[in-house]
Length: 389
Image 1 (cartoon, one colour):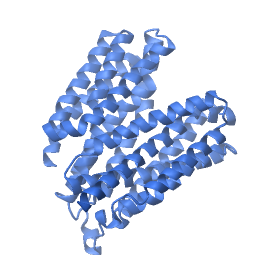
Image 2: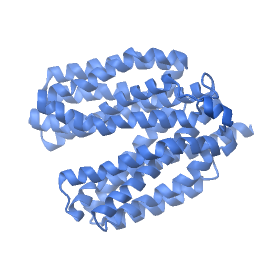
Image 3: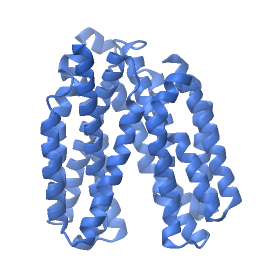
Image 4: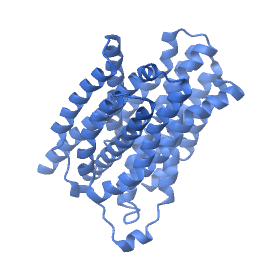
């Protein structure tokens, strides 16, 4: 009974950690236009500055995976949560362009640290309880991102400065992080300390790398939906500003719904079947929507595509944790497996938008959008790796 209560408390804490992460990201994204205006940045200079956040993420993934394995995910997440909460204040100072870039690097580093730790704790909870939680955790991240962005839009419209807005969010999120800090499982629940002999022999499993590539395929599509779906409907099919926002809204809707129900479906039918059928359904659906053309075709295509890739990242984290504990025990810890998949997947968010832009100039944006469709079908074709979980 005590174990059940501990798992329930930890599940609530991890859920709120995902919401917290999503709100912080949504808060940041909602004020990007203000960053640009305040610092008088060109598009290219803003892009370079934002790239520093991505570098911060990538820099953190290796060391934080090892630290999480050594000290336990709850120890790291308890430290990372409050630090992440104050990051918006650091970014909002906006002294100059150099400070902005530096603060974004620290923000990205902290974001990745908290992300790896909370995902690892989620994987530990799944192993401890024998149930799937990762899909729902990631659904709550999406909800948090939406809430953070919506609040940001409202407060910006109300005339709050970036500093006032970010200070308000930081205080509320910091208090939340303190409240949930005692609810996680103990640090001993997932410590993985290897002897020097094991460290010398340790080799990263190739299968985990392949799973990371699947995550990258999914993140390319996710990034394309956010950055290019509205551009396609407005510039190619002449949609109004409101209608041009609908492809991404449809995509986000199915992402949230798919993640909320993904755990139950994966438990009932198995992750292999979910990704095999979902990837094929989403890839073909997006392709048909693009071929049909028009705003409706694009909206329907992204609606179907979102349902296909919604479960990919959560299932990859679950499978990586399970494999690290069972098949690759002593070779890689769950924290290191999660960090490895996160790092490879994140390249999709970095490389996806400029890749789509390059292809759009070469073959038009409409046909460039077939790349995410093809990647979804590739995920479907590769789903058999989950039989090794």
